[in-house]
Image (cartoon, rainbow over all chains, first blue to last red; front, side):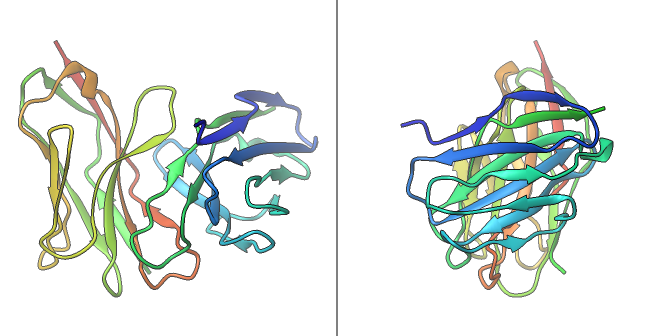
Length: 115
Length: 114
């Protein structure tokens, strides 16, 4: 069982370019999340999806969009990348959204550099 | 709003030393509490959890007790190993939250020297 996979592993991107980070889970989890990890700031939630067909904004959504067409996939798109979006991006999933303890499973991350 | 505060690192210890990483939280309601570990170059993994007051989570020799009276969830290990070198994140999940995400502390980097 792969769990959560993310692609690409790393990417260097010119400012102004469009980029989609891919995330796929094979655990049939209802909820999925995108976080960014920055030194000294920990992990911050960008967007989330409680179930297929629904999405919501997290703490730092500006400049990012997501879609959840099916249970397994949750791509994150940067429409026009800026240097401040240089970060490590983690996708996560959980069986349930909210409710009882909400153990999340994380992917290996995508390291994105915007020049 | 909900928040998590954990001690700043980095923390450097010798092998077999005792480890404590402090974590305190602010939350409405009755959150669940977690410790996640991130080894170099990897994603986060759940280390242990506690879902109600006085619960003790434990795994791989690490322990943490949910203390509602002090709003704390300190991580401890009696004898650390070089392989424990990683970044440790304390987190909470608000049961009543509609989005169900975790609120993370900023992380504490632990380095264990032989």
